[in-house]
Image 1: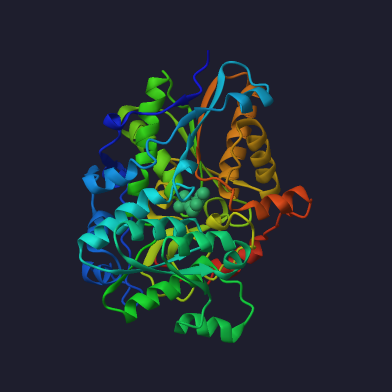
Image 2: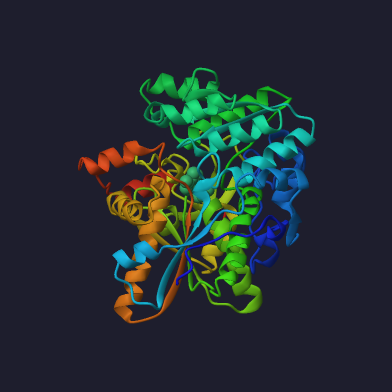
Length: 454
Ligand SMILES: *Cc1c(COP(=O)(O)O)cnc(C)c1O
């Protein structure tokens, strides 16, 4: 009988996160101060972020211990299941040599991989004696994860939620409220950045970049608050490597090792989370696993963006980040995979892509939702619209292997479930969902204005 599901006992859960920086052939370029264009100081970073997270951000240690208090919270939903997608394989009529596994991060209380970083971030904030945090959320997954984590460690949390999501996803907002957080639709009238955008266009639907500007501005005006974010930064991706570390042990129990590892890509945290431990094995132990990041066609920073220093937000408050970017002024179409609508990629992923150490593909939302529906009908789980990009890429890989007559073991990360994002499915099922074309000229408009610092 084929293995269906593998879960590690608590005693075998990973006790350390993996830091890819230790093994990168080219180290990432430093973040720059937006005014002086000099590398950012720890003092400035400490003013914005929690101190221990800044230490981790700048660390080159290969492994970082997961604090006991964080491990205790992780045990609420971890180990997450490693599942062989036997029913999907059947529907695709795959030969025996082609296997699809998925790591099911949708089983967390917030429904995605995001709590893997939210919990340690809240823990370190509380340990530093802070009592207030601010953050932003796009699709609402990070906001809900952070709301849960902040409550676990007794912190007040203020969340700026991209307005289109705030309106489309009232239940995400209610999750955050239930866990005790205050949620504002962004752009809001609570910050200068928000008011400026509303003055220019009262109907602005918001973007992650705008919400970040508001959250950072709020921190700069409140000395006892710190800002936290759910992707892009090295420390976030570090926390997410628990996914790949568990996956490796689980596949070992099944007697397998992946030829291909796939994650959808917003800022790079769930992709890096599942892929970086396998990349370590490539770099250090000569393994040859292909790593594939799947991004949406309408927000193609990896496949069509440029490597340049750029701001993390629309207003230009954050440090300058060396990354593949579409420009901080880029405004992606209002697609349903809200978590993938971000203009830039994290620094480690950007450098690794420059060095050719992973591949990127772009996928249309209609094609990816179709893959999501097939997955729901076969494996039962309704995936998050973001995750459907990874599912689609995995199906494409399986079909390519079948056509080539090759064997292939494919692992993808199911980054979350879509039960609170059914609006996307309504649009798909009614035939109203469209793909968006993006011209080179549109990309050039927001990329060409970037100052050339690389
Ligand atoms: C946030 C999110 C993503 C995208 O963010 P990454 O940091 O690139 O992982 C993907 N899937 C889900 C379910 C998310 O919540």
